[in-house]
Length: 456
Image (tube, rainbow, N blue to C red; front, side, top):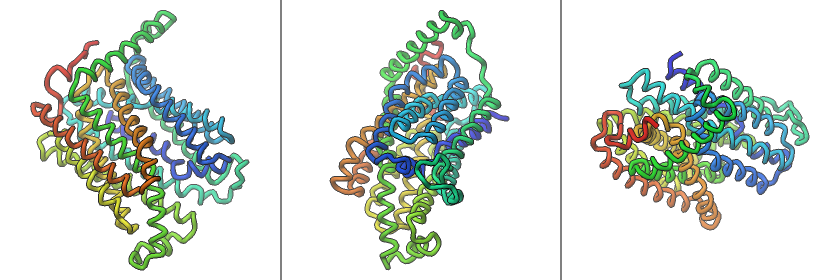
């Protein structure tokens, strides 16, 4: 199987596996007796674990091998899903969060780094932006399919006991399917990903292990030096951080926002079409509301595919000016958030919510093409971990500052603030476009930055 097909298959199936329980994960934890406050505790444990391990895990991938690291991450993810299935109190869910956070950190950037290097080795002239856009489209299909599957599974297994003391329930069916899919990801990665094994002398034995751990430290120091010495990398990390704020506001606030729109659609005569869709096609129960929400979120992932198509066409039209393309889509995302904030109808709100995902997906591939062009292959995994860390930092800041603001004011106000944050990112990409004016057709950065420490 080709490098492209291998990456697209393994990566999209991995996202499918991860997202299947998402639609009911909070309900599942509540059915096991957890309060919303306790759910927030294990969620914070997960986020903190990822933040603490993000850089060391990227360094491990560069040192011990991307495939080995990804397989280890998959094994830990599978174990975490089993813990999630068997958790019945806060300590069990915290143990799950620790293991799942470790798996998430280990997988971050490992498979993507393998793909970029393997693709460039086999197709030296292949445009990186379009390859990453295609990967993003396959991942979005996996996310959409996983979301819809997770929303439908509890209804298919309604004959199982719903008692919170039971292991097998309609809600836990999503976790079991997720675990089975995760096992398939591990098997496919083991069979299909081809990577030369690391030097056995370097990683074997006590002296080899000490040497390898010292190299991990060196890799992390290199990552810090690369970031400090590169203005393009700093601008790209800023853009990632700001989009992290937007992503957090989407994932945290969309459910209460649309719950209100669904209720208003049933009551309001002005939205008769939306009321008919909700009431006549899906019903009027709480389960029907969950299916509507699953349709909204699953549709947003599916619509994101059009963003990747648009990104490829725009970058071609702009003759490879990836920074300008990323800035255009970031600006459109800001506009979408502003208009979405003041939508009162279900149909209009759904369309605008989907547009935020279309523009965010379109932003992603030129942004990632620029970032991969700015880092040396030998440090690609750890630098992709740095990029992920920037996104988590934005999510953390958004959660810390904007969630309380939404409670004190409204979701509409917060999404307008979010639009302003994204507009700030546009200025970063305009500055980056000036810095990369001498870039090649794939957005490769000119000068010493792209080749820095290549041989280290």
